[in-house]
Amino acid sequence: MTVQLQHRDAHGLFFQIAYTLSKEIDDINERYNGRGGVIVDPNNLRRSRGLAEYDRPHFLNVNYIYQLPFGPGHTVFGTGLTSKIIANWQLGCYSLWKRCAHCYHRSW
Image (cartoon, rainbow, N blue to C red; front, side):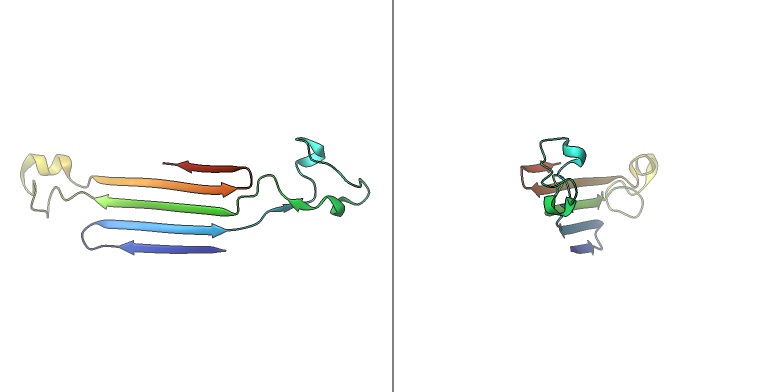
């Protein structure tokens, strides 16, 4: 399940927030018993069914872009050579938070 919110502001601000809730199920924890997973019955792999090692149940993504108020059409440096050099600059940020059974990670 994914929920997403977007907003565009008339003053040059755009932001987006997205949240994903999921569950990954696998027959064998790491294929062929690679990282300590146990195969209960080699003839019936469904007996080894459970949460996958790569399960990420919570995933939050936040990003924004801000159009800097410089250059043509703005009050600051609206004319001249400086306006052409600094026109259309943007400031942006991307943040990601994820939660799993054995980790909690946040990146900026």
